[in-house]
Image (cartoon, rainbow over the protein chains, first blue to last red):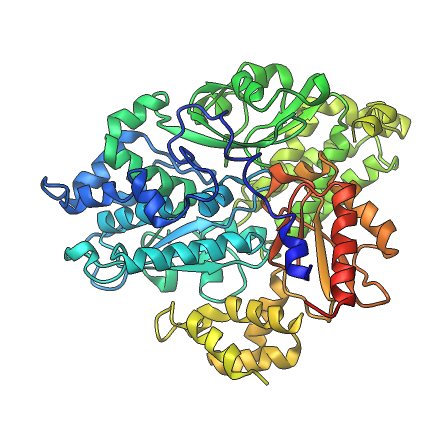
Length: 455
Length: 165
């Protein structure tokens, strides 16, 4: 075997994470098997029908830009990248009569620890993203778009490029799409290892060929985006939801979820569960049901804590989490965020100090260095958690952590500062006793033997 | 020197962007350089800068800002093991330590035979596949149990001794 053949043996197949039967009424992942990602397969699943409907090629009148945006508004679709901002509303912010170039950008820089849903969309159903982007471009009168893909998932970038070639050859992309008067050029770009580029203005900087350091907002991308031109940026999963909405209507999409939280959502469940993977379920599905789909807590252990929306979202103890449903409003009410939908599950063998130690190191490592509170504060947090974990903690350290975290929040250009601070504050709030035990006894409260046994 | 075939790859990237925004292709061009040469040297940065009409320092800023660009020569196979929290919960760190022992190096180091460079990495975006590792920036390897790590390292060793890459 040559080296490529050796490595190919270990490539993900998607069987465990995506092609299982444990989704509930899936829309984006429906009918996928790993080999049916190509254009003809997507068309066989009803692909590009939504685009034909929009362009008036299905026998009915073409939809106006306003009709498309109104449908997306009605659907209750909210941004799947983390902020949960209403998509239709975002689209309506784009200046319609702008005289120059406008841009559409897809944020596939999926780097929020715990999140791996967009990778499976791009690998196994890339055309659904392309179709969603074409429809979005039509609605906002945009003629050029980019999909910025996480550099670490290079095979997804290659796959998306291949899908773009197919779409161009079939007339879905390019000039005069399907013989209509609408033109849209779409290209793929990639990152190369910078968490911060998931932040939309850092992503734009990167797309311009610079360091990914976030910009001040305002001005927002809708008025000053890529190359200073009006730009709309949505997450991969957000675009992927659009074709279904156009085909079935906004009301039908909203009805899949719950009020103000329309549609299905893909949750990446990782950590201490029997079957880690991506699960597409209706918004508002009880957390307990999601946990059950993922095979329950590993080895029959007890659930201890869950980080419900990617590593930046505040951790929640088991009892609070078990009472939640998986949607923006329920998780926010419980004191956390649905974020990107990355559910990190931890069982009763886990030391929260050790968990926070790894996260705090991450934020220190990924701070772009632009704002002093974040650059200095993330390092400070990391060093203090480090010394607590190492048995060198001081009695005042928990208050110090809370104070440093509070001093970062709201004082930085982008949300990375908050993202570093929130896990710290939530850990101290819910698991302060574990930190105090570490300081007082210089050892972990959770039996070391139990932890080793589970590893 | 950048070969004609490399320039053709560069041109394909540049064509994606407006004519006055060639700089946008710098990320892709540097990744191409790294794929072909194993790392991004200062000389290569200068050549990319000249090709894209950028200041060499602007290219260097990009190389140094993004984690995946290597500024120094690495082993033939660069192994990046994710140890972020979701992976830590599923043996990511165990996998890294196992490789340290197996290869006889610490993370960040290269084996004496120049075959392997072992690195800890941040989230690779494949959390449900943990333990995961990225080989030479492009090949994601999933569910890397100790048995599979053995298979991978041994497989790459014998592939290299056969002279194929």
